[in-house]
Amino acid sequence: MSNRFGLPDLGIGVGLRSVHYAHILEQAPDVGWFEIISENYMQTAGRPLRMLDQIAERYPVVMHGVSLSIGSTDPLDRDYLHELRALRDRVGARWVSDHLCWTGIAGKNSHDLLPMPYTDEALRHVAERVRAVQDFLDAPLVLENPSSYVEFADGTMKEWEFLAALAEEADCGLLLDVNNVYVSAFNHGFDAREYLSAIPYDRVVQIHVAGHTRHATHIVDTHVGPVPDSVWELLGPVHRRCGASVLLEWDTDIPPFEVVHAEALRAVDVIAQERRGAA
Amino acid sequence: MSRAPLRQVQEWFATAIMHPGSLAEGVRIAPHAERFVADGAPHALTAGPLASAMGRLAIYHHGYQARLVECLADDYPVLRDALGEDAFDALCRDYIAAHPSQSPNLNGFGRHMATFAAAHGGEHAAFASELATLEWAIVEAIHAADAETLSLDALQSVAPERWANARLLANRGVRVLRFEYPVNWYFQAMRRGENPAIPATERSVTAVYRQNYVVWRMDLTAKMVNLLESLYAGATLEQGLASVPELEADEVVVWFRDWVAAGFFSEIDIA
Image (cartoon, rainbow over all chains, first blue to last red; front, side):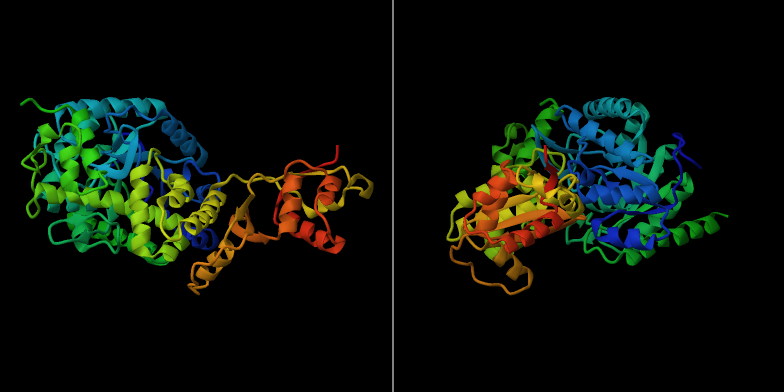
């Protein structure tokens, strides 16, 4: 029940947000680990980086990026990769993750996680780039399934088929966001259980849980908490199959740290209940 | 028709969702639209269980603008309140079209706002530009690298006979901003929730600096700024003091104490 990369189970973690710096440094809460948004600590030399240095001295840190743009047909941004690697080495990040998506083209960044067409061409393209990034980092890249709001008509495979094939072809890790699976299942009308049954769990290094916002015609991955029961219900079976580190993302209307941490710790009960059910 | 290359798909999709006008216009004028759009509908995309293809694409179109406007509002909270939400939103949307992000992160995205606001026009364009200058200096101070600063002890350890030819070297992290309006007064009043009217012109100078990871603002009088800028330009203490008429010794001592405490200088050169 561990991943093929030998990356550790860090337990239950919380996404590091700047409004919580003071609490974390002053109260030293008993948190398993923190995940940072990589770009928040790049192209800066000031307070954010200083806070991160202090937190990384006390807690395991994992890096989660939003601008690698692994699916873009623009060339890989070598300056970005150099900065990413330098940050990884600076804070001793246990692994580096980003999303199966593209964020822009022709040098323009939308700062959104844009959907890929799931075609053979896209699979070959992304796999080649993942391998290049892994060579550069000298470590497995961990890719997250994004939430999406539209699909391409000429796609030839389902997202879960693409993800599994990519992980195999590029030999990369996976960050399985069960909230994103729930959101995309609603938006595209597929069965989340079918998605989750196709995941190569020996490649799952990390799991995300988060909240979302329901609209009349779709659900948006807003990371607003608390996590709905419908998402917690997906965590148990997924964790039973991979035993990966679990992290709560909370990015909208962020409450005090104790509230976020308590919500993250609900994962402990979910996992224990799943184990009891399986016994 | 054969499947469109990934490059073409991305060029069309990105141009459509980043289009500053309507999405309907964006999908039509984006590159390769003839491959992806028919009768105004994006047939390259599928409808969802509850939403049309265009409705689904609109989530990305809306999200692009909203995300970047939110970023600019984070950088320019007082400018937003000064202009009002609608005017600020319009300014930001034009800014986003003129200066799309070309960086992996958003730390520097708003750096052109002062220049852009001045050229954008409107009744308060000149004031808005200066307010943006102040707020951007605060952003830059947050992200600036730590700088070595001269301590009061180090300053006081210099023998009196060496003072005249000593040079106080600038801490490059300190920004001295000259304004035509009382910008810092307005900024402070807005932060206190007083919501004053946009002020009339009245020259002011404000230094923005960071100490212990907290950003501070200090107003400077005309005499203060003349002396400080003279020193920053490389004048010796004797030259700097001589360049400012009618200085009182007592007031200068207080200034230097405050400036050194605030970290305005990196070191003293007594060579």
